Amino acid sequence: MDKRLFESKSEADPSSYISTRSRRSQNRRLLVCTAVAAALYLLSGAVRDRFDRADNFVTNSADEALFDWDKIKPTKDLKWLPCYKGFECARLKVPLDYHDHGAGDAAIAMIKYPAKVDTKGDKYKGPILFNPGGPGGSGVGLISNLGPIFQTVVGNEFDIIGFDPRGVGHTTPVVDVFPFPLERESYALRYLDAPLINQTSTALSEVMSRAKLLNQLIGDRANLAAQYINTAVEHVGRLVVDGVVDAEDYYAGLWSTNLRNTDRGLRLVFQQCADSGKECALNEPSAEEVEARYFKILDSLDASPVTVHSDGISGIILRKYVHVVMFSSLYSPYRTMKVFFEVLKALEEGDGMPFYVFVAGLLPSLSCDCGSKPRPRTGGGEGQSAIICSDAHSLDFDHKAMQKHFEQLSKVSIFGDIWSEIRMSCINSKVRPKWEWHGPVVVNQTSFPVLMIDNTEDPVTPDAQKMSKAINGSVVLTQKSAGLLMKLCAALLPRSLVLVYFQSHP
Image 1 (cartoon, rainbow, N blue to C red):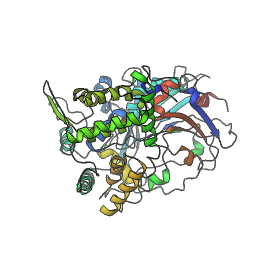
Image 2: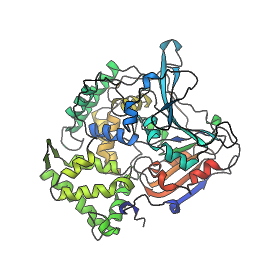
Image 3: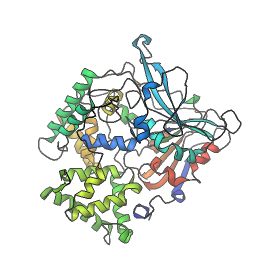
Image 4: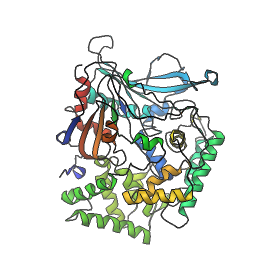
């Protein structure tokens, strides 16, 4: 049993747990190298929005906060300028609507962590483009945080490039539903205490009404271009897809297959806590006893929520907050779970301050910058909803259909109450793309075998094996591990099979 979750150095080398499966011999032609890292970071309500921003690195440092993207002139050919520390940035000018060039332009924000070799020399191998996933994730934030690590994984002969998709982050136009940041935070605070859909007899109706209101705001204020999908994968060199969802399920707007392994990941956490002795703050002789202790803490919060009051900080910690944070921690358990269990022990003893500190900065807070007025940035919340809902082919569901959807998800995972809100975010959505992709999800040939990455206990993106069958010649790299694999990139150095994939000769 892998006990790394509660080790003092939790980023242990997982390379011994990796296996591969190939569906046919590799095509040895080498073209421009391109990679896609796709993952879902979708949580609940206002807390979901904040966790989404943190996991996708929409803002990462003072360097990013001080850099003025508006000073970069959008161009049709990339013109890279120095930005942050050790990075280069550009804004790519593209049509807002490829079917109507008179509709104006969009400017795609892009960031590059440059290769460590001469780009005109023989050692240079080209750019690797990272799609941040989400939907609604910021590639600028992702690469500005993890670009150096990704380059170590694939090799320093590559440029590491990220971008903010349409409507997200520094790309313009943004999905700007709220005119001012303060209004956005006020909206989030207003619904922070809204129940999860299984908490009360009227919770489902309340959550559906909230979703309708947000989509009315999007319909009234947002100017969205259609989202385009490039299926010409024969023009791509090498492609890595990490965090793989069922494409048919996603475009149908169902979100029904994601939680297949989620509870198994939670059980792994409980088992490793039991196996880790004093390294785990909630250690018990067996996984079943750790689980019982965890749910006893949640039950106690139902009976008597823990209050926090110190130095101007005050609040109440409810069961649903801990439930949502546990779900989010399953995305990156090697980074968060050891500390989170220490937080849970403090809650067990009636001390809520460690929990507040653990989520500080992730919860909405009212603040007003009366000096400079930075352009509002998205990457969660309304931007995410706009992408999800415009991608979905069918949004025709009512209260009865949503109740059935929740009940079906709840049979699969205890986190069905959280995940079902994703589909609800599209209720009453009026924003539709001018062009829709309807499949089929079949690729007969690629220039080089596609590499898909899968974890055995992936919390929300478990479909690498299924989607691999639709892409002829693709390979699935499976790691016996919890969490989303790109979160473990640093742990895969330097023996990473991803490195082998990019460094191998045609």
